[in-house]
Image (cartoon, rainbow, N blue to C red):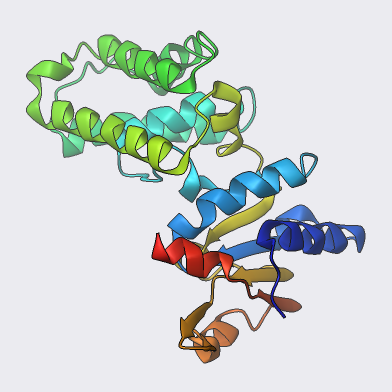
Length: 252
């Protein structure tokens, strides 16, 4: 059966599962590749405004935990006042990457608390989250007494980091206001939207899969069905939604 409105159908399935008592964090929506999920994620958020969604792979800021600039973004946009230990750990990891991977000497007096303070003061200084992020990065490196323009590796990283953000925002028409970006770094108790690879090894009660069909002439064929069912054998439900929406998207 074809569904002409994929997002609406998946929204109905999510609503029905939550209505049965399934927790949001026990539901996962997957597709083969992340670019398939940008439009779908936005539509689901509009259709189900009261349902929390977690989709770090499809935010304007590419998920990259080894990138120190991504770590600053994570500290900036994740809920303040919560997960204090996690925030300290992220700040400590940031300091370690700068010191060990980029081989930049830092003062022994620099602590995770200093990084957190520099980032926190940049929250909501502008309605645009990307502007807030740019200022936060500047403040953190000023704290570390690092001139980014004089460090070629950091300078190149910063340029590519923001180029990637601009590209994702333009290509997928993503919102850049602070609140919208924060949703990608928010509550873990949320319906997860991800690629197959992104949630490999995770366990969910209900898995809703889309974009698994490719069109060969007039006959649809399913990608990696045996492997997929083996991967998600622990799920109570594995729901496959078939729609021509992905066929159109793949052709663009």
